[in-house]
Image (cartoon, rainbow, N blue to C red):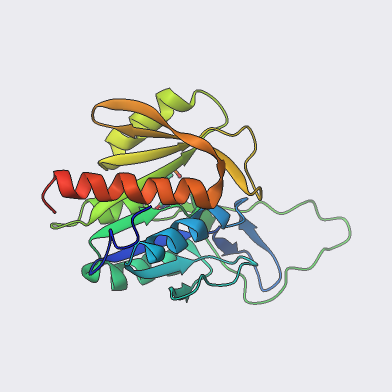
Length: 220
Ligand code: C5P
């Protein structure tokens, strides 16, 4: 592993889940420990980059030397990313962003009332952070992640094109949530090939090497 591959570059990473409040005590969230994203941030730092990690709620400590911006909702994550992205040459979106949020956030805890049925929660779409960054006039090199419960190759390839990103990383583990290991597959314009399986930090370092090679090939 070459330690200074990313010297002089800024890498922006999103990680963890987002939390979408229903009221002061309840909310909707996605399953994500943040481990993969934190490993990516750590690996980018090891490679010499300045790293900004925009993180949803996780139990993880910030990797050494990484600037962490803590957010809760998808909208907060979007705002933090848009504030930071101008300085970044690479954007790696590992966060499990909630696709929807409650259309209305109640200021007080909603009470259960005798005889009343369960409430219906109207949802509205959250912004797609990765797609928005990729659509900027001068986007950084964008890397997305995809976790699918079925037909990964088909969905991941389509997702890469839809979000207009040069590189998409597919999570192949049947249930990688919270685990320290993972199996990853890379999808790009040429097709797809395995990145490997094993410890998330080892995979993150391999991914950083892949990204560095692509930046070099593109003359970036
Ligand atoms: O569409 P889907 O959620 O499967 O796409 C996953 C990829 O897009 C991940 O890289 C994720 O971080 C990013 N994403 C995002 N904002 C969203 C939804 C997904 O940045 N609202």
